[in-house]
Image (cartoon, rainbow, N blue to C red; front, top):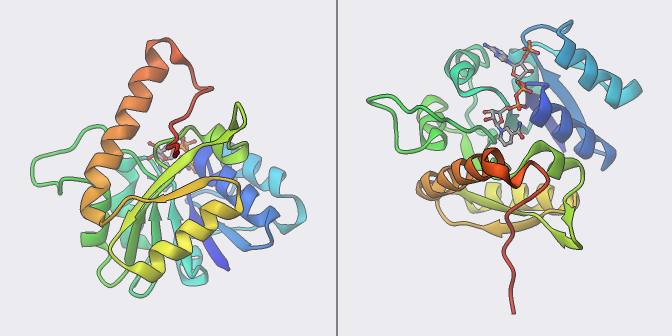
Length: 204
Ligand SMILES: NC(=O)c1ccc[n+]([C@@H]2O[C@H](COP(=O)([O-])OP(=O)(O)OC[C@H]3O[C@@H](n4cnc5c(N)ncnc54)[C@H](OP(=O)(O)O)[C@@H]3O)[C@@H](O)[C@H]2O)c1
């Protein structure tokens, strides 16, 4: 698939690397092609690495992955142009909602990108798990929610391809719960569990 990764830091650089390794056509949409994070991501991609403007990445990708700090999302979406028909993966975490915000960051992105298919995914794990999803022999789970069945299946396939256990977590309104789970991950990480841990769902 053609994938535009918006942001080239820990999450963006990792997604770019693992999807590129699976044969997807990936571009990084960045504000500054010379920033240290962009340069590091490009170096890890080797000859297939390409950094373009936010608007160019948005036009390129059938799938767009938002890997930005929340405070950069509004202005960045505005710079990306018409996003209708695009599958937008929201990997962000918003730690300080403001009055007037939707109950989840993902629902706000859906409001800001009319006509796009917004899917919440990959926000409940550390970036390290994107590159190496196996913990004690068990894959990390991505809790994936969204309202469009085809878009959700596409993102679940993209997660499965890189070794992640993709779970359908229901409609986009469940993103508030999934974002809460990420806050729990951060709390536990800072309270002694460290970054080398992950949430997963197990079955009998
Ligand atoms: N780190 C994790 O383990 C983790 C896990 C799950 C979810 N998340 C979420 O994923 C998102 C990205 O986290 P990250 O750790 O990848 O962040 P990061 O390493 O700091 O990278 C942030 C990226 O966003 C870009 N950026 C920052 N401000 C911008 C602006 N105003 N306009 C355009 N681009 C801007 C940066 O560009 P420059 O290089 O130019 O600064 C960089 O490419 C956050 O919402 C975070 O909460 C992170």
